[in-house]
Amino acid sequence: MRRKSKFILIFLVLVLAAGFIYFKSLKTRHQELIKSKIYYTLNLVDSDWKKDLDENKAVFTSPTFVISNIYKSMEGPKSDQFVVIDDSKEELLWLTSFKTNAVSSDETRKMSNDFVCHTNFEYRDAEHYNRWNMTERINSQYPRITSISNGVESFELPEGFGFPVFSNERLFINAQALNHNISDSTFNIKHKIEIGYTKHSQKALIPLQPKTVFMMFPYNPNDPFKGPTEQLPNACIPVETKNHSYLDVEGNALSGHWIIAPGKHNYTYDASQQLQIKDSIRLHQITSHLHPFANRFQLKDKTTNEIIYDCKSENFTDKIGLKNTPSFSSQNGIWMYENHTYEMLLEINNTTSTDQEMMASMAIFYYDGDMENKVRALKL
Amino acid sequence: MSCKPKASELPILSYNYVNGKKELYKVDAFEFINQDGKKITSTSTEGKVHTMNFFFTTCPSICPPMRIQQMDLAEEFSDNINFKQYSISIDYKKDTLKQLKYYSKLHNINSNQWELLRAPSESDLETIAEKLKTNFKPNEDGTDFYHSSYLALIDKDHNIRGFYDILLDSDVKLLKEDIRRLLD
Image 1 (tube, rainbow over the protein chains, first blue to last red):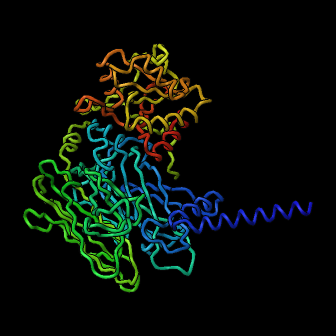
Image 2: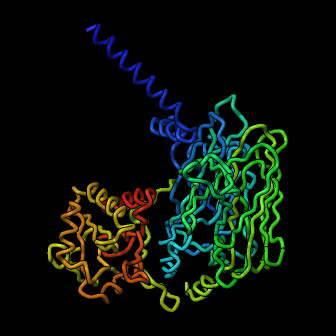
Image 3: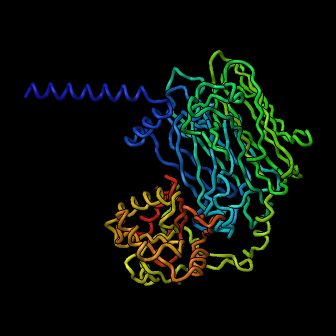
C-alpha cells in the first residue's frame, strides 16, 4: 500500500513537472490563454461580460484580466464576445463614438490605458447586410467597424455621421490587455468599452462605411526569419508566420506584424489595392492602430503628392507606450479616386537596445451612398 | 445585465423592406427531393429547428471544410429529433439523386440529421437563394460555382433567426448556442 502511494506520488510529480516544462515552452500568448482558462473555470476572477445601457450609449465591461507578466501586442489576456445593444426592440441606431478604458476589477478606479492593447469592434456581415438586402456586400471585406488601441483612448465620427446598426443586431467585440512596463506585481483589471450612438428616431445621420487598411511586407515563407535578401530587399522579419500572415493575389507571403531593430527606420506601402476604390470615395475619418516607437504615420495621394492624413504619434519618454495617436476627422471629407495611387508612410524610432514589434493600420470611414439610399427609403 | 440573449430575443431576420416598409416572410414554400428520393416540403420542417445552406458534391474549395463542421454539428445534435440540417445542391446538372446518395454514403453522413437536397428546377434554386438571402453563380469558365459558407438558422415556425459562417469557429460556437436556444 505504502509502495503504491509512493509510485502515485512520483507519477503525479512527473506529470506536474512535464506540464510545467510544456507550459514554460509556450509563447506568452498561449501561456496567457491557459492561465485565463484556469482563472475563469475555477471562478477565481470574474469571467462574464456585462452590459449597461444608457439613453445614447452602451457600455460593455470585459471579464477580469489578470496582469502578471510583460505583454507585448497580442500577448496579453483577452476575451471575445458577441453583443447586442438592446435586444428588447428593433430600433435603428447610428454608432458615433468608441471608447475603451482600463479600470480596476471592482470597477471603482480608472487605471492607466497602458493596459489596453486593443478593442476591435466588428459587425457580422451576413446579418448586417441581409437586413438591408445588400447581399452582394457579404464577404467583400473583413467586417471590422473600427479599433481602439494603445494611444487611442476614444474617438468620435464627424458630427452628423454614423455607422447604422439595429439595436438587436449582433456585433462582435474583441478585447485584449497589454503591459509593456510593469513586471514586479500582479493585479487585476477590466476593460470598459463604450459605444456611443444616436437613435434614428431622434436624428437621421449620414452613413459611413468602414474599412481597415494595414501595412504588410513580404517575407520568405521558406526562411521567414532571415529578413531582407537580394531577392527580397523589402522583406520584413514577421513576428510569427501563423497570425497576421497573408498571401497576396500572386501568392506571395506578407506579414502585417514585423520586427523592428533598434534605431530609426522608415517604411512605405502602396495601399491602393487594399483600398479597392471603385470610381471615387469621400473619406471622413481615419483612426490609426500603431505600436510603441511609431513616430509618424501618413496617408499620401501619390498621384497629386498631397498628404491626406499626417498622424504624429507621441510616445512616452519614461516608459514604453503610445501617449497619443491623433485621428483624422472631417465633415467635408476628402475625395479619393480609383485611378490615384495611395501610399502609407511610417517613421519609427526604436529607442530601446532590443528588437521590438511593429504594426500600422488605418481604420477608415467613408461616405456610403448606397446605404444612404436604403435609409432614406425606410418608413419606420 | 448579461450579454447573452434569450431565445425569444433572437431577432427574426427573414424580412425585406418593400417600399420602405418591413415585410416578414417565412421559408416554407419549397419542394425538394432528398438523397433517398423522399419529398421534402415545409411539412417536413414544421416544428423543427433547422439550417439550410448551399453546396455541390464536386466542390473542391470550401465544401470539404464545411462538411467537416456540418458533420460535427450533426454529431453534436444526433440525439435531438427536433434539429436537422438541409444542404441544397446548386449543381442541378451533375448532382442527381444518385450522386447525392453516393456523396452521403461516401462521407458517412448521418442522414437522420443532415439531408442533401435536389431542387425540382434551376429556377427553384434562385427562389430559395432569395429566401435564404444568399447567392450563388457559376464561375466564369463554367467549371465550378461560387457559393457562400453561410448557413441560415430557421426556427420551428420557418423564420430565419441567424446567419453563420460555418468556416469560422466563433460563428460555429454561436450557431450551436442559438440552436439550443431555439430548441428550448
